[in-house]
Image (cartoon, rainbow, N blue to C red; front, side, top):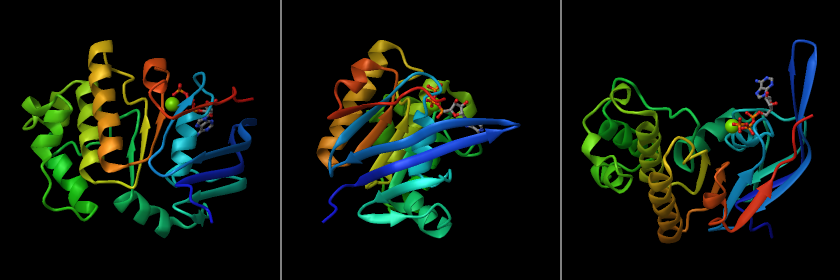
Length: 218
Ligand SMILES: Nc1ncnc2c1ncn2[C@@H]1O[C@H](COP(=O)(O)OP(=O)(O)OP(=O)(O)O)[C@@H](O)[C@H]1O
Ligand SMILES: [Mg+2]
């Protein structure tokens, strides 16, 4: 029985831009067990964001297999992927994706309700991420690091079955980064939520159960 939450077998991914081909993955293998945490490390351009996009169904691949929650997915199955993104997979990207016309609280509430959770303590999640005092502000009225923390609050509030976060501490000072890491690992422990964190932050990576080092893209 396949008990992995994430299973990637022999994955090949290349981009073509102009006349050039960038081979990002040629035979990538990776698994994440229920409740586990994995740090995705590698130099800039090694494919961390690309892999998170692939695991969210936002990129296609040429060869290999991706299985999530025991089901093998195909790149073209957009209905299945969008259902997963709405209800089960929380993604926090490098550029936090908040609705600009909504306050931080409203953004958290909306994300949770799209996942089927209408009674959510949006203020409580924003408090835990240290941005509770900014709850009534709009995304363009807060800093990049504060927006990213609001995006994490949105991810937690949807009670995902898998959390994918791209550089969740990337724009934070050391002290705030440690606070956010504490919240992330507390969430993982309390909810048993498996997570993959793309990061250059070795302090964050060392707290994960496994570290996967990506080779440079060719
Ligand atoms: N749409 C695209 N078209 C062509 N090449 C792309 C595209 N998206 C990414 N790439 C290339 O694929 C490689 C992997 O990019 P990716 O963004 O996944 O790297 P990363 O590890 O997340 O880097 P960083 O640490 O800078 O965020 C890079 O060489 C990048 O230039
Ligand atoms: Mg990246």
